[in-house]
Amino acid sequence: MFNFVLLKLMIEKIDITHERAVLIGVITKSQDEDKSKEYLDELEFLTYTAGGEVLKRFTQKMDMPNPKTFIGKGKMEEVRQFIQDNDIGTAIFDDELSAAQERNISKILECKVLDRTNLILDIFAQRAQTSYARTQVELAQCEYLLPRLKGMWTHLERQKGGIGMRGPGETEIETDRRIVRDKIALLKDKIKTIDKQMAVQRGNRGKMVRVALVGYTNVGKSTLMNTISKSDVFAENKLFATLDTTVRKVVIQNLPFLLTDTVGFIRKLPTQLVDSFKSTLDEVREADLLLHVVDISHPNFEEHIDSVNKVLGEIGCADKETIMVFNKIDAYQPEPYDETDLEVERTEAHYSLQEWQKTWMNRVGNNALFISALNKQNMKEFKKRVYDEVREIHVTRFPYNHFLYPDYDEEE
Ligand SMILES: Nc1nc2c(ncn2[C@@H]2O[C@H](COP(=O)(O)OP(=O)(O)OP(=O)(O)O)[C@@H](O)[C@H]2O)c(=O)[nH]1
Ligand SMILES: [Mg+2]
Image (cartoon, rainbow, N blue to C red; front, side):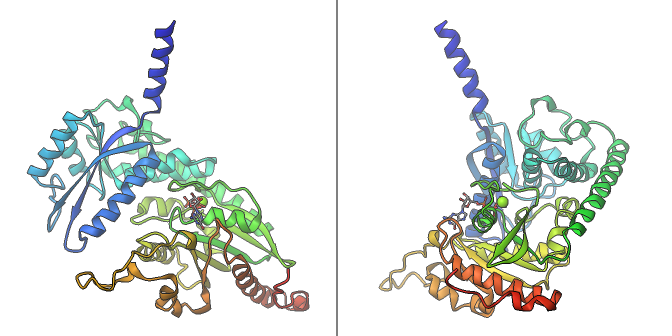
């Protein structure tokens, strides 16, 4: 009996054990050691979100990735040895691999080989809740798969499952291109139908002012949504907690508007995903005002802003009225700087919040706000700014009820 319980415990333990993985990245002229580390940190977070555990990272300095195997021969042997000695199931590359590279590498390493795109698609597949989100992910997976069908993973047991093998697209992998193409057409039709229904729904919301929260993944959009709308949107410290947009009616000082929480962006967001999520992003496109939320406590936040702006550009929202919301000020910590140490140059990493506010952040003028959604710091200032902006849009749209909305009253 005891043994049986022990065995059951062991089995259950195995069930919850994370898939063992190694990460592989490169250091190039345009991507120095620090950058490479930051990218691998993010890749590790993605792996963890997908249900994996990273046992080791490998990096190689190179001018150009090897067209056949991405990294060089010697490094590959090092990786292979580690994988063999440590019972590793998955090798994850930070950059997108071509079909040929993927094939060559998995032959050498004899394990599952994934790239950043696979990982992101897999997380989306795991997290898609509604049939609409699932359809969009499935479409993205099919689009990713199509050019890679030939010989993909055929020498591996596909039934093993796990990261990269999950989700709606998995049964198509061994079938031929035509079937996948038909499937793509079908999914597009399905999305079109839902799009029409959603456009009608959006139309029914009337002319109310619409505000959308946008930003990099995990910056606190849903937390901010919960704070201001007193709603209960799912937020957690993993990437892509939100896939479906949520719309809430918010009232600040009698002034009603609609607030939308959206899917987070990420560096190198797979183009297939941007495309298939275009309609989810309609909410962003049709918004009157964007709140671009930034995690200022993240060492890479400036690059995050660039990534988000890039996606906003791709969906035609570059010039939209935007308030920059720098969140997580409670967690912001500049690197300590020793003035007597002449070796270390003072950089942005040492800036205090006040110093940051004097940089380019100053140029976005009163468009920049500094808050903590979690600790509810500076929420009054935030609400006033949003109120003023929404009122401005509102009174242009409904000039006759201008008088209804006086200046923001601090004593709310
Ligand atoms: N320290 C601190 N943590 C915060 C703050 N706001 C949010 N967080 C935390 O950051 C994590 C991510 O928050 P979410 O609200 O899920 O972020 P999101 O932008 O909606 O993320 P995705 O939906 O994944 O794109 C959670 O663990 C939050 O508790 C803040 O002001 N300060
Ligand atoms: Mg969210």
